[in-house]
Image (tube, rainbow, N blue to C red):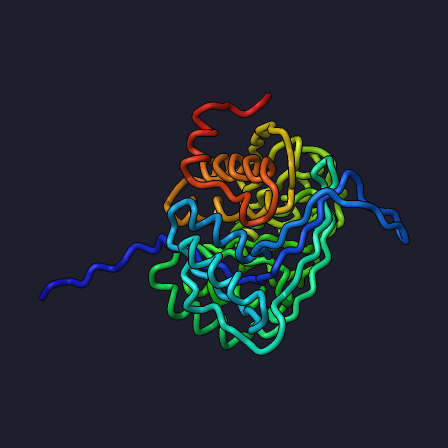
Length: 317
């Protein structure tokens, strides 16, 4: 009797929110009550979910998206953008009403602030997540999720994926405190310094404080903490040691999707069997490239771009 080969589990599943990103660019952000002239405006597919799943697809991973989109004027832009990026949208559900919206303001230093209105994202359900994960688990190796969806649903997705044998990567943004017993389902957590501060209560300003924050996550059951530190690069905290990754310096234009590029590349590299250190280095390069272009999804780099970037540069020391 011929044995049936088990398919490799190299896919990436992203459970998250989706938004139409309305972004204004101006030399500075207005003060409260002030009206100023802007320099540019864009309307693009966005949200942490699409950004991360498109980043994973651009690496070459089989990338599947679990989310809800409205049946409004933004629907086709969302669906076409994901499809053109090569994302599997079998588990993207269309629901009555408006699509989620993100209003983003970017100043000339490339810093931004964001207001998110969930709208259709609120329709994402336990049943939809369970159905998708059951169908995708046989060929998927990594789950990426974030906290733009309801916290309880993100925790449920993490626990379900963990039980199905996937590596669970949590991008804890926007940061909100989680129950201590939720962390055991998270294999890798990827906060920036602000998110790590909010989640742990430890003010993260340097390598030493980031290490303490990383150990806080490990004490609650997380396998590995990867904390990004902007100009200081990133650190990886495990039960064995702490490793620092120097930053790649570039000229920033818009930082909107840098963290999502990092997460998508990290997840795809891990699903392909890359070591955590190599995956973090590739993720750092992807994040650096993303800040050199305007917009969220349009800034996400192709694998060839990341390969060329890494070949031409070594991290700054």
